[in-house]
Image 1: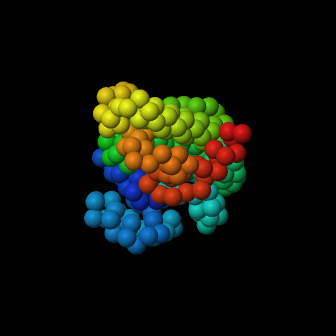
Image 2 (image 1 turned 90 degrees about the vertical axis):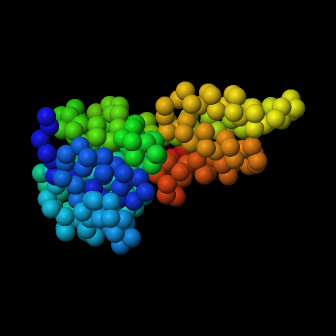
Image 3 (image 1 turned 60 degrees about the vertical axis):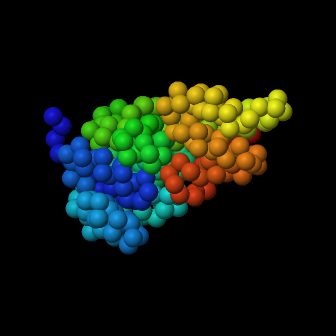
Amino acid sequence: MNATLNVTFIGVGAIGLPMALRIQAAGHAVTGVDVSLAGIANATKNGVDAVSGFALAPKGDIVIVMVATSQQLAALVSDVGSAASGQLWVVMSTVGPDSVREQGNILRAAGARVVDAPVTGGTARAKTGDLVIFASGSGEDIEAALPVLEAMGNVRQTGERLGDGQSIKVVNQHLCAVHIAAAAEALGLARSLGLDQQKAHNTALKILFQRQNTGAAAVVRALSMSLLYSLNLPAVLCATLHCTTGKPRESQFTLLQNHTH
């Protein structure tokens, strides 16, 4: 049986809170950190102790970071400074490879160990502990983080370099966008053949994506329904790139623009 770990979970919002609850259910001690008073109140209501600042939390063995943007990650790392020494930091936010490498190097210089581990699966899979986690970093550091990571989902080790996990997440999001484009084309074809689009969705697309156990497939299942009524593909793609964590963010859309041309 794994030893109980003290975990500081930064960002207990829509997806962060169910992740924190999974860690706590696995027997670890969790303290949430959030700048939102509503977020703190919601975490407390659901049984997770939460505070408004990193310095107010008990010293954690592992620090999980689930902030929304690269700017928030940079501000967090700057505020924490040398207090990160001796801790294992796991960046699970989707912030891009450059951001996690830059901030990871700062954390390492302060004496912390760092794992890059963005997730896919959304809030539904966060609640059931079925996220897919793209972990990169040293094998020793990933191994040390496994008792916590495996409480949240299925770990896929993507490389030893910080940023490799973020890069795989970009690929995952690109596949998601391609699948939505394909869904739009398929529903358009159904219309041109005179088929009832609702029936086409239920008999073809729905069956296809039910077989795919990924966050991308979950997104497509939901958004293909909207395509029945509007084939405004750019708007749908933008919505997709914002929906992985339930929060609007600039990083996923920007990364796709930068890496798919």
